[in-house]
Image (cartoon, rainbow over all chains, first blue to last red; front, side, top):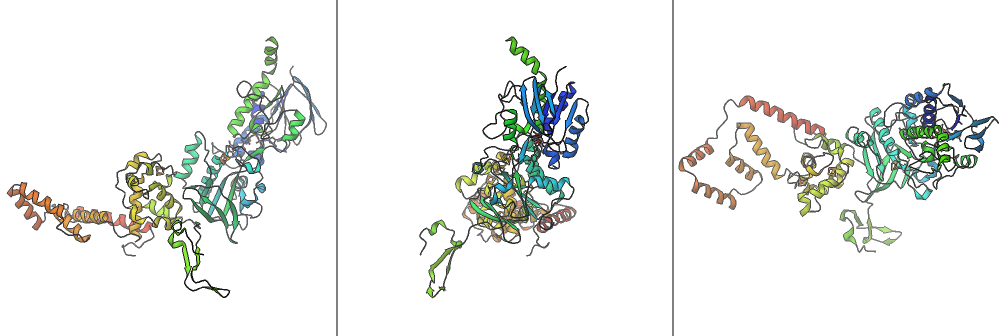
Length: 350
Length: 248
Ligand SMILES: Cc1cc2nc3c(=O)[nH]c(=O)nc-3n(C[C@H](O)[C@H](O)[C@H](O)COP(=O)(O)OP(=O)(O)OC[C@H]3O[C@@H](n4cnc5c(N)ncnc54)[C@H](O)[C@@H]3O)c2cc1C
Ligand code: SF4
Ligand code: SF4
Ligand code: SF4
């Protein structure tokens, strides 16, 4: 009887790995530090997801109920792994309360941390209440309260979404593109226009990266159907004239400075490496890549392999990822974990 | 200090006070020259909607500023100031003052539609140029262009009689645009025709000029067309926030 697979993190990636293992009749133990499963889409209260337009609580909720309860999945909430010893096939993990778990392999599905906009003070977050993040707007929509200015609850006449906040910015050591925020912003813009047809939405961008099929459904549709306006400018600063917010920058297409009044400014925040990654790296003895995400040993042969044999990684733990890709990687990690014994046999035979 | 590189600054942004004394020092005239900010301080959100409401402007919001239209443009090749991509941008964001700076060249579009074939988003820039020229006229920013005057004369004759009498179209057009009837090219053309045409045909032409022909039973069609045209014009004016009648 083989030992279970230890999965750390109960977001889309971890849920997908747990489900794949359970479906194949393998036992797993899912360790989640929060009091709920679902990861960022549930913990941060996202509204409708890209690209399915399904509510996060329904779509990810369904992923949760597949594995919890499930006789093959042993879910441990509100805890984390403090120690991780042993060798591939015979790992021993010690949880916060001292419980020891034996595991054949481990899958790290520990996800990302939202960029904290406080680190870009020039864009007004923390100074002006009506400067918010995409996460906050997701919550305004998913809670049913609607998009309103936090300062006084008014319906905004005009909303600016600033892209690449906390991404693609060497000033603050973030040299990656967070991949999904362009599409998420286009989606949010459409949702705002749908709820508030008299509210105009402007997106300030450097490049638009609504990759693959997201181009038509999000980038084009937001312009053609919802009349969202895209302005090529990276905003220099957000201030206030006492009444409204002032968004300043250069409109690069007409080579002119702009200083435009807005009621609400939304930061499209990026996906930082999980703040726990330093700890995770030392507990699990896995390498981080130069950006601070969990390093993958190889892209083509063992997609989910970390620097430590028998320990796998999937989802946004290893770099900015979409939900779909996190799910696919969860499956890949489950497959790698399931074939671990075979792989060892093959290697030994070689 | 006088500003030496005035050529780089838009003249209307250079401000001088004729009489100005600051702390007892007379800085009148060029001593008080300063440059007004060139920053854009607001978007006029109505502008795109107004132009989109005019025939041809419908797809303007699709433009993603690729520049294919301007690159393909016949007029841009001779006048780099003629830039459909740029104007579409100004309209989309409602930068009216900027657009008005070019009001006297926008109508120069020759409707070749090269832009239309180049545009990846099916904006139909040619039609947008037409809608924009129309908008400028309706708003009173530009006088009626000669081509509008010609079209109106042509259309009003068709509506009135159900027919076209070329001579009358031309005469009305020259009159309305203050041009002489004895344009050398026209005289040459007419004398050429007279020399070549059979006499009976010329007589018919002469009679038609004096007693213009009418399409029989036209009055019903006329009423329908007139009603339709008035409806369209009223809708256009309403979209622009102008009164229905055409005076503003
Ligand atoms: C504003 C915003 C909107 C988004 N909208 C979409 C969208 O519409 N569509 C889309 O495809 N993607 C979207 N994304 C991206 C999406 O959030 C990620 O792709 C997805 O959450 C990644 O899943 P994951 O399981 O890898 O990580 P996470 O969702 O981050 O899950 C990681 C889990 O691990 C747990 N964990 C972390 N550290 C530990 C630890 N040390 N011990 C135990 N447990 C731990 C966490 O609590 C969490 O439950 C959005 C991102 C943002 C920022
Ligand atoms: S997806 Fe778009 S908003 Fe996000 S970091 Fe990349 S370019 Fe910027
Ligand atoms: S139709 Fe007008 S705008 Fe288009 S290419 Fe021809 S001249 Fe230029
Ligand atoms: S070709 Fe079309 S999309 Fe490109 S700038 Fe011109 S109008 Fe816009």
